[in-house]
Amino acid sequence: MSPKELLYIEDTLGHEAQMKAACTDFSSKLQDADLKNFVTELAQKHNACFNRFYGLLNS
Image (cartoon, rainbow, N blue to C red; front, side, top):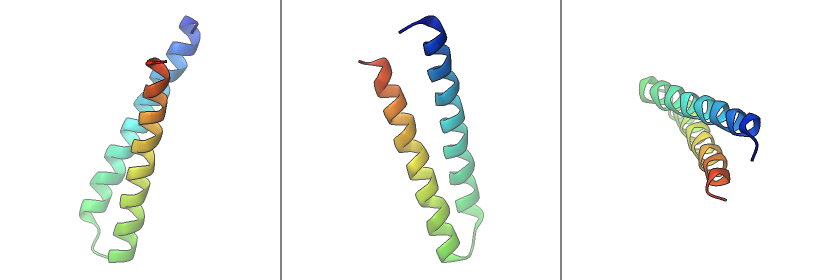
């Protein structure tokens, strides 16, 4: 990978980590069960995206 591509992946990893943390934080503060489940699922999706992008670095 080129240095520019690595910077894009690094930036994306940071965004995905931030979104996962925000969703996790928000879900812990929600009282509505349906909304809490939805936001928890969003956190899991952002974690999955993070893992996929991180996997590109191991290829």
